[in-house]
Amino acid sequence: MSINATLIGQMITFALLVWFTMKYIWPPLFDSLEQRKKKIADGLAAAEKGQESMQLAEKKAKGVLKEAKEQSSEIVNLAQKRANEMVEASKESAKKEGERLILVAKAQIEQEKQQAKESLRTEVAALALRAAEQILSAEIDKTKHQDILSKISNQLG
Amino acid sequence: MATEVHAAEGATGYIIHHLTPLTVGEGFWALNLDTLFFSAALGGLFVWFFKRAAENATAGVPGLVQNFAELLIEFVDNQVKDSFHGKNELIAPLALTIFCWVFMWNFMDLFPVDILPLIGSIMGIDYLRVVPSTDLNATFAMSISVFCLIIFYSIKIKGPWGFAKELMFQPFGPWLLPFNLLLKLVEELAKPISLALRLFGNLYAGELIFILIALLPWYLQPVLSFPWAIFHILIITLQAFIFMVLTIVYLGMAHEDH
Image 1 (cartoon, rainbow over the protein chains, first blue to last red):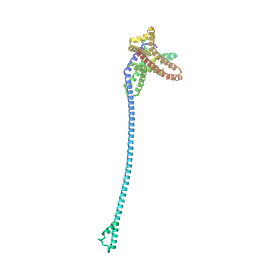
Image 2: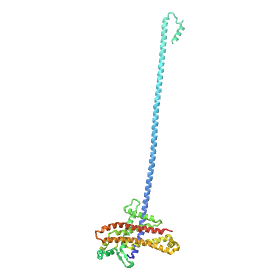
Image 3: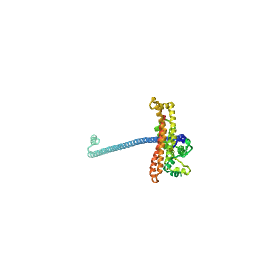
Image 4: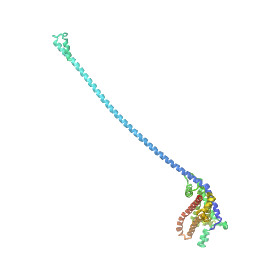
């Protein structure tokens, strides 16, 4: 248990070991540690960034989707309105057409009635005239009583 | 076999045999071959392992060796960052070397006390003390090296005059100069002595207890040596850790300019 020259030998060994560690062992290992730390930190940062951008994109997509939905519902509404309008318009025009047709028909009927009346009257007048002619052929001179005859004819007309 | 020879001299002989180093030379210039050999071999193992890790070091996915080396590097680096606030390229590798080397020295304590001396005796070596930290030379060599570094950095950072001023005028001011000087000298000298003796004492005592347990009847030995070995795992790690941390702290103090 006595101190002897071993002390010196041990000190030299120790010095060599420390020197070697300092020169060849510590720096590369420590560097690789630092590099890995940086790598991991970078990776984490990138992952976070990716997540953030993904969230952003999701948000954006949601916005676009919502907008599209709104637009489509608007379009549907518009189309419905338009269809309603068209139906309404066609109903209206059909009604009008119908009314017009009725009017035209009525007018025609009226006209025909009038015509019939007219022809009837003329026939009646002619008939009456002939009858009167036959009755009066003996007594009345056609040329002499022209005035009276035409008056009667007018009254009949 | 050597152990049997000494067994004839009783328990004391057995203990003394186990604690006697293999020595060549006389007086101060004697060399404890076993201490030198085992510490150098363990140092070589340490260097080989870490060199392998360092050569294959990559910032990508680390292999098993690199992982383990990095674990230690990071552990030591954290300790250095906690206790040392200057900038010094030497401290962290020094701390790593101290921790690993001392730990490996101490680890030799966990080999069964008779096995390596037995192998030694087969090879014709009569005395073999396998735990370098049970040799005062080993622990003092390390603590004195640390002490030299403390003095070196004290002078380098504070300047010769600054260091002398600290020795003379602290802690009680210039009027108590001799007293300050005495106090400071004791404080500085206590550092290497306490470092060396703490490690030596712990490991010497631990080894002694293993030897004592080995003297007991065989059926008692496992009952005692197993818990003691488990406890010893804590001790050897703790002692290596303490040596490292105190070295860092002392060097940190040497770097602090008042």
